[in-house]
Length: 409
Image 1: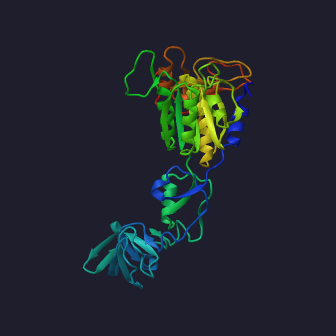
Image 2 (image 1 turned 90 degrees about the horizontal axis):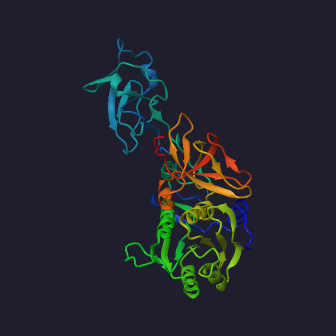
Image 3 (image 1 turned 30 degrees about the vertical axis):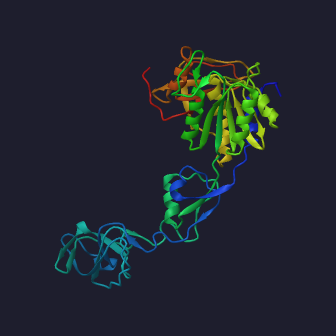
């Protein structure tokens, strides 16, 4: 297991052990971004009755066949309806009914004449335009028919789809469960942000970074720090198991005398799946099942920690709530500089983007502050293990981590 495996194999093995969680029922207002667990069938027609698309007058279209500005047709107005009113009665030939947008149409009406083509004088309406059958009318069931499939299992619930489900008569939906994640940063040198920083200590920035990524994807988490002592790490993992569906550790994944996380997990019965991946950065990433729950052992170095999370842990967590890869949109870009790697290894390169003619230019972030480079990146370029390099100017596919804010060249 200490032999490094390829990235694709690692991802495949990880996803194979990321089982979608049990479904739960949520009100529509709490279901944004979640994955539908079952089929949704409309309970009602939408609209329930034929309604007006415009402010105007419900009419019998045949009455206005010859209406024109120089040949107005006069109708008698018999009533008025607005959106939400009960159904009106019936109109016949020579009659009209005042309606506002969304108002139900009276029986007998087959068109709505927009108010700009009509002039009301007393109870008489002078119509200066035609209105063919169906003009300005939303027919009963035009958006949704009762019994019609509104959404299928696996659908991602965005605002528009939630609105359609609401219009079809549902107040709740069944969605795939959202994994609760425990994040544990191992290291006696680590201090939580806001606490005094003593000699030789570091703030637990990895903990904040992983927690923030989870929050961005709407995945609930709890986070904490534990000292580099095997027993304490084991106790922290054991406590977390009862409160989460998946666990992430930061640090303690490489194998030195202080890297005790793997062994602490073994003490609790870890079923190890892999412990090294031919990925740069991120090689010392481990994965296994602890009490049947996924455990991701991420390296402590900031770039390796985030890369391992984004490339392996995040896709698995999303799979657990019913979503398929990729986690991020993929678009085309042009490399501004050459990128080199090593055959047999997958290299993940952070880039910033600059507007080009089309597609955008991707500038690799190298050297200097690792934390600053991580903060400045907008996308990732993945150099697969069968390639040793990408040349400057070469078209590549990038994984877009955020909506681009294009920089100058």
